[in-house]
Length: 211
Image (tube, rainbow, N blue to C red; front, side):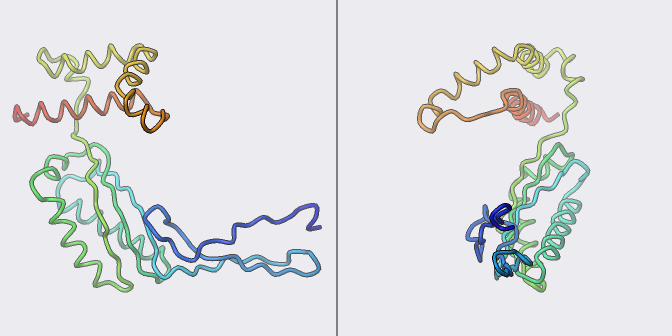
């Protein structure tokens, strides 16, 4: 009985308007008879699909591997779109041997330029809106922990900081106090942020030293 078990459906939006509105867009067609739901069917209506993709770059060892992974991600999104054109954003993440090459000059821009030209020629077309390099260098933290130089000191200082979660959270609260005062406090993973900062510092230090 509909009164006892009402069906509640968001009617849907016919078209995603920005990158955050990815995934299928359309409407629900509901067949009813005397208050009873007989059938439900979701019908896609979007003429263009937005997509967001994350690629783990850990197994990639060179730029050719990055290009192949990006190309594969584009083909996967094209197939998932069911014959509709796609606008996609792609993030490269993880620790990878190719990190240094990606950070060199205009490497990523050149990859994206070639990829766009290639994918626009497909059927249906696919536009690569952006590719973000969020990769990190491969670091042997255990090894660096025993090194007697500034990189080792940095790793050990971070270890000591993370050993006290309360102090770690307080450190981040102090660092973000001004931002939180303007935008409001947000939930954050203090340990992950500090480890990320450590890795960024190590990356720059080792790059300057040619290591």
